[in-house]
Image (cartoon, rainbow, N blue to C red; front, side, top):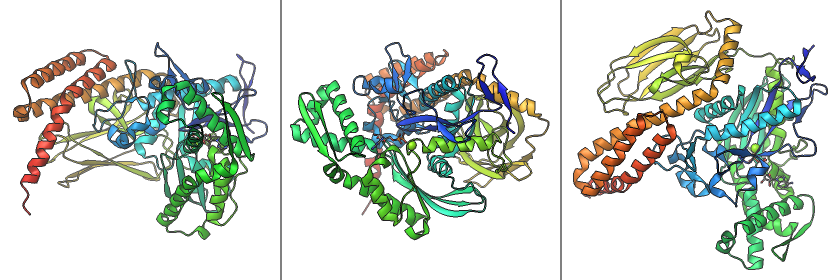
Length: 618
Ligand code: ADP
Ligand code: MG
């Protein structure tokens, strides 16, 4: 029997442990729970409203954020201060998103380095983690308001193709929002759970999850056996979704009315009105044959037949992705026993029909496609809470394990609640020129600074051959065996020099101590995050100062006198900023130094390239 407690403050019934499921989407986010009475998953909604919260953050003139419908109203009206699609930036460097930089109507900092992207709003700089945390905080507050009980534990979903850094960023966003992230689950896995797939331990199946959302398309091929989901392949298009369907209707109407995109953009509120009308038309056509409306004194209308013709090329693109996913998994369509439809855009009948025709069987669309991922996350949460006795929990790591990096930061390799046995490897490099050894310090805990975590072991990897900073490649590997023994190995890949150590992480920790360490990490999340951001900004600043100094030393001849003076001034300003504990100031000064050095850095690059070409003979 599940334990039920009464919350004295609110008088409401409370489950011993309420873990919510969260779909943190690119376009929309929502929370679901297992209903304490019906035991069925339900999406949380305030009376008479949608369960979906648009994943949009708007900052007012004082820099205060609002999230959701209200923020969405500012997309066209105040684009610089309205952040949409922050999920696309999670765990990414500017280099990663360069190609699509034009997509973002707000300012993504272009420092053209490998460091993680930041978004500038007024004079504040936000990481994608912070932006996502605003959305999660809003979801948490709404859930608490609806449930009338504190919500502190969550399962959060991510796309199957999210890498280690993107998953860690999602965990950090949860922590910053005051949530203990019990597990990160793949979106297609969650959707399958909502359809009851994988719930029977004996069942074995190969399935396809087709997810067409607001701005992204994902197809995942999964294999399920013994209740374990294995991702066989993923494919998709990160810039294709419902927004593109809206745009085909907008374009169609603009042609009819005879208005160009430039004219439209001069009237932000007109553009906004047209976008909303187009989306309304699209949704209407999912269940009706035609749509018509008034816009700016014109009658706009469209039939389902015309809409389907307009979107045919887009649908074909998604089918091509499905073909590629199958090829990668080395499977034919016959091998797929079940097709699960996910994402609001799969409500379009032409989409359903095309997918069904391609796979040669009917698709599963019984569960609400924009809630299905959150519902599955709630099922996973219920299993973790131990309420579902059909599931035996596999052994898991109670606390995160990682190593110390520059500035005393904790870099997590194995997040808490990972199934064991497991192994993870990650590459690191040196900080100083000619650095011959590297100290590997292993820590356990959830805090951002290693000094607040528990040190498990430490060793020196020696014999790294002399190389400039950043060149050696040291692979650190964490392996936990089925008995919970952790082995840490470090290897310099160019020279092959290697060292390892064995530790027993749980040794000497009581459940209560583990619980305390978790609670501490949540209460300190905000301070920790600020310190981490400051340390990262400092490290970045030091690297840039170092590189700039070396560069100027070598390339004096390429620079004008004025450039040398300007650079020296910008470097000095950055040095000054480093003496203060203000990450925004450091960030601003880094930007200013980048502005000054960009033109001659580019010139030097050209000179180097043409130099190299001259040296070649045919
Ligand atoms: P994401 O996973 O990217 O956050 P969602 O799954 O919430 O996105 O899908 C949002 C998209 O679904 C939007 O483009 C929205 O217009 C579209 N959508 C919602 N309802 C319908 C409908 N009835 N017909 C067609 N498209 C719809
Ligand atoms: Mg989604």
